Length: 391
Image (tube, rainbow, N blue to C red; front, top):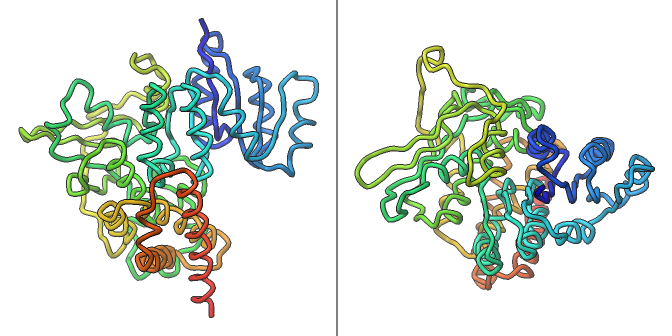
């Protein structure tokens, strides 16, 4: 019997890689919903090819374009936040959550509420509302599977292991576009330079987050939330080859490393087929050709996002939602070339500092309404901080 699947964020790199795997075995899947944002042409092509029930664009102003692209196909067209949530509420066995940013939180919760296994590539959901996401999965007797390559690697390294025996979790990072730049040059880094990744083929926003290590900062917080470990058990290390995705260290001194090519289809495929392993169209590593693997300590002056992530993990509460919202607004401003590359971390730190003066907000109960309100307030605060800096 074919599995019912939906893909949220279908037009991004994670979504496209998920579609690639599903299209290789079309008889195994019935596609319920595909969603995207501005690339309605791609969304429509994929929805028609996969015979999806519904295609949804987050952009209400593009609904007519989507309808036109789907004309005569039998695929339903819809648009807007309510349509995304409705699509997530449609019965499915497995849902890919790959919408970028906090916008992926509500659809992910809706998918869990209707009992789908949620393959989570939207790290912001756990950063902003980890307690709520995990609670929703438990209450609906379903499972949350990590799709970030690092967390998939940790998850695989823990199969058959007792969490009580875990001593440390090491998350690797490529170091991004600027890992070998002189620190002084970062002040003048351009948008185009930050948008080019040395190892991975990803969207612009996540590529810039990789250069600033905000992506890795989010992953550190996500590690704490998903695996329930203490902040002092989580480490980050620069690994330029991007072949070891994570390492789990145990109390007996053993290290369990997950090694694989920099291809997101590995983590996606593991989540898609879990608990089985199936053949995947990814490169097989030639270890003699690789010859060596290198590691180095991250420079916190170069990557202040890592320091801020540790502060967020220690602080807890809704500080993750504040951190993520401020980061997203700062990233928006950098993409619009209103602030410099290094200023992004400065803006986020200032927003966190100002919210510390209102501990009642940070320590408010972890409800969806409180998360979304805090997200809104933090975005407003980030805009206010940047306006002040602009004079």
